[in-house]
Image (tube, rainbow, N blue to C red):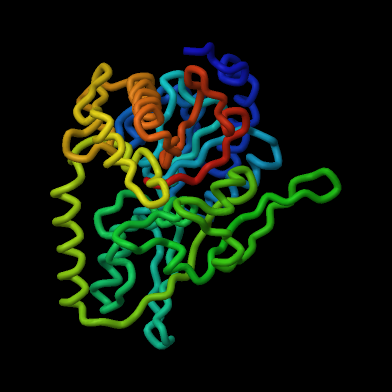
Length: 345
């Protein structure tokens, strides 16, 4: 592996600023915290600094000060769909723990019905709440780990549904500049302004520009029993086709007209292991942690899968997960000044 980045090698660079910011906001600043516990795959090195927030208001205040002080940061929701380097992450890691206090409001008077939700709400929980209110449209999200904010950034989806199909408006904190100074601005973006594509959005392709605070979703009225039946069917399909336990979720995006899992399986890699990382025998697009897998183990499997699929089919697989940090022969686009809200983000 490559050496630690210069920022990570000098924890004193941001220590004083972060201590002052944490004190000002009444938050606790942690140092050298292992990140594996904050990821769905249970993989990852240490955070140089770490702060947990429990409300969107605190998140907005913290991010504004981080931007103004030009401190590199990574924003995590639930930590799925991310692979954090064994070397860890420089600067500040912000854990969005607003989920326990996240607010959800259902407006049943509108047609179609409108749901407002804080970015920190758990996506699966939101889908279940909608079902209880007799609102259809989020059935695809049942069983998907992560927060609403992360799902919005990554355009999460399954079973022919995705966030782009539900979103009406997203409230974001936008990193703007005025007279060479950062001026955070709260704005509302339409679904068109999010520039959605398959498993991507404007916020994902420009990760330093904004964070999600809340969103308005459009849902349709339906019979709660029918909604629950559909959700049960989706969950059964997941149990049959997706491995349980610690994993990164779908590793690669499906190429046009095909499936990444099928290509990896056809290349003969199902069940392949490197260290404690394995390409799942159940679904080849899921890479699982058997207990003590390192990020480097997973990264080696990623390269083997890519090489095998290119050799057999001439197709280059594109990652759906987000690598964070330093990896061998990998120049991470967000390692220097990361600003990500990723799916549980």
